[in-house]
Image (tube, rainbow, N blue to C red; front, side, top):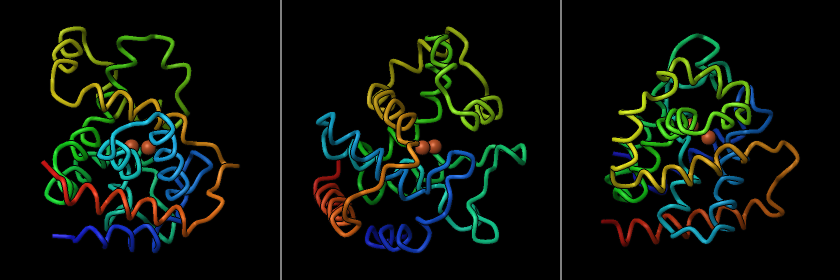
Length: 192
Ligand SMILES: [Fe+2]
Ligand SMILES: [Fe+2]
């Protein structure tokens, strides 16, 4: 199993990769999402979930020729949320792993419950939506909302959708990494 410090190395090695189709890099998207969570005063595990929700795109086999893959363009769903959650749960516990696991389903939920939400999604998010199962049916949505961490997943999703601004970068990369490192250390020490 990967040690949590290795996740920092993974960002340092692969974070420059484009979040293909979105105009931001993986690192930039992760950082922006983490800042939105922090600005919303989210608890530390949810802030960390925001930072790491797309780490599944940076796992081995998920990138080609130095570019991150855009699986939706190849017509397949990479299940990045499930791959990430399996990695994160033993390291940081359910409060980090479950919102990550549910962030794709949260999109399917929101499209079903808020028709105007679809219009706000990026092109790639719309393309992957179909591959991920499309909008939830009413009964599925009602059931989904009842499970633990569904609320956190919805909050994470709203930051995820906003964290795609090409012009936004951290003033200090070192400071941003320190912030991530601090969250990881905290969540690894308090995992439930
Ligand atoms: Fe994602
Ligand atoms: Fe994302």
